Length: 348
Image 1 (cartoon, one colour):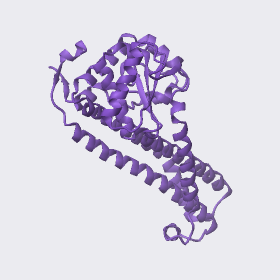
Image 2 (cartoon, helix red, strand yellow; image 1 turned 180 degrees about the vertical axis):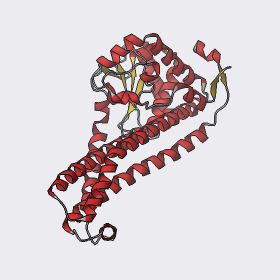
Image 3 (cartoon, one colour; image 1 turned 90 degrees about the vertical axis):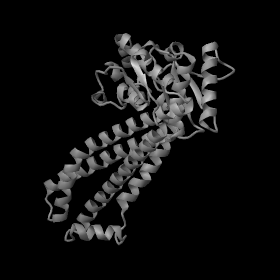
Image 4 (tube, helix red, strand yellow; image 1 turned 90 degrees about the horizontal axis):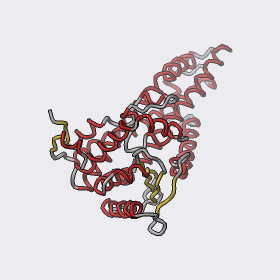
């Protein structure tokens, strides 16, 4: 165990309650994203039909849409595009997550040393403990910094990736806890949920931008439709407020799923100490090697794709990208919050 644990007091956390609470929060967030997306579809339909029926009021157009007297063509098109985009994203998610890294897959046949064999066996053990039907693919990323992530839209397509630095610096119990955390992401369908939420959020903003610029140019040409002018004001307001709301919801979802994965790790390990020790070790290592790791993260292409999926956010150690606005926000709860959720608090 990490020496840092000597400075912490341990108690028993109710991981079942944590799983239930965070799962409930996730349902609410995903439902909000879906409602917002459909709402923007209805807004687009209202905007289209306000041009075709300039004398109709907004309430009349809305009633006609929900009673299907007018076909909600924009809403249907948005739903079809979202479905196709999701299927493509699901199919390519594992390849996208490994983009820009030097990696190789580990199997029982090609494991090069005892550490790689141990890693595969640990994942296999945690797969059985998690009740997964399929063995996830196991990848090692050739990097010194300590991190890991999971990807895949289903159990069958799942994969876990771990950096060589993490594999070499953690003991077996800590490695098990980290893999239990990652397999909990797979078991809880976190990758599918976050991909869905991100795609809906991005497509919502794209549609709003199209409506916004259309409203500007049609406004310059002049419009006698009072409904269309009212919709233009709504679109203007949403164009600047909805992206902020979407970012906050995505961050909340990401933090919620991280806490669920931590609770899932405790459930599979039947103890909170190994994961706590691993998280403290990872943070201490990032702090001790801040400059070297900052350069390594920044020199790795497409690192922003993996940031949300990592078990540890480098921002928590003060490692920030000079080019990414996402560094203004954290996709993970801070370490103190994560440890407290596990029933571990720093001694006074």
